[in-house]
Image 1 (tube, helix red, strand yellow):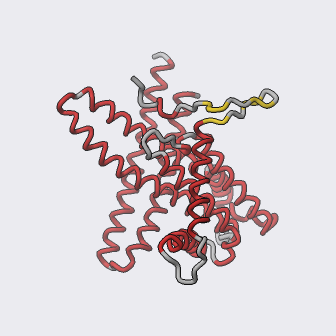
Image 2: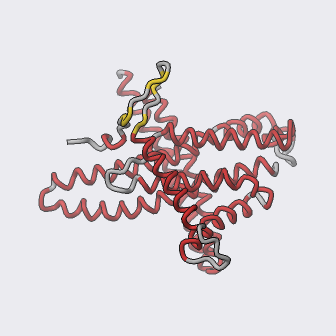
Image 3: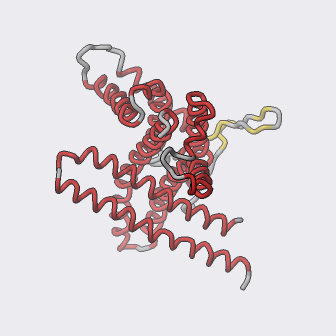
Amino acid sequence: MHDSLHQFLIKKLIPIQVAGIDISFTNSSLFMFIAIGLVMTFQVLGTRQKALVPGRFQSMVEMSYEFIAGMLKDTVGVEGLQYFPFIFSLFMFILVANLLGMIPYGFTVTSHIVVTFALAMLVFITVTIIGFARHGRKYFRLFFPEGAPLAVAPILIPIEIISYCMRPITLSVRLFANMLAGHVILKVFAGFTIALGIFGVAPIALNIAVTGFEFFVACIQAYIFTILSCLYLHDAVHMH
Amino acid sequence: MEVAAAKMIGAGLAMIALLGVGIGIGNIFGNFISSIARNPSAQPEMFKMSLIGVAFTEAIALFALVIAVLILFG
């Protein structure tokens, strides 16, 4: 029988080799395409009517817009709305990718560190470039906030630099660890069900509770990733 | 003691950091609950902020995890 880690195996669906580099279409790519397709279908179908007083579907699309726009306005301010497409795409992709993993036999794209690290590096590099583009060399002032006495500079600056560079790591590992741990727990308890015979009802009950919790965690982790990206954007746009 | 056994013990010891993280997250939500008791209308705002607080505290737990992984596989 499969062990609990077998679900994270990447299978090549269509092997493609270009100049010695393996760019096969894997089950991971398939589920990324499905996630993007779902988000796009949701948005396009919902705004088809373009009614001034929205119906139910259009309301849902507008609510998702308002959620992210409100988040950006609260954290970054009105000038943060220029970065709305980036933050919106980030949030919707992570949310749908997390939720697709909850479907039976679905593959969780974000349970691989390479995917979450790519997303986190994207956020980190974007925020750093925005910071330098807006403030030039004064962006380095981020590591030595105003009002700090000069004496603590030798300690404060390395600590600030390290914690700034740990941002992509913590961002990616948080999402990855939550997704990985959730699915491993589900599989481990499912494995106990057969082994316990008649008392297998207990692991099933626990599994039901953990599945409900995993849906919650999927949404919360997408929200936390996005709100932390907005907070880093706030640091880059306003320097304090 | 052989290196492999020492690595396992080191990784296990690194997990002691989770003690502080558990206290921190419990603190955040304890304060969240008492703040709702004082002012129930602030609940949505406070919930969002408590989630941000939990995210930052969990980052410390992830530092411990990174060290444990470095010990175990480095």
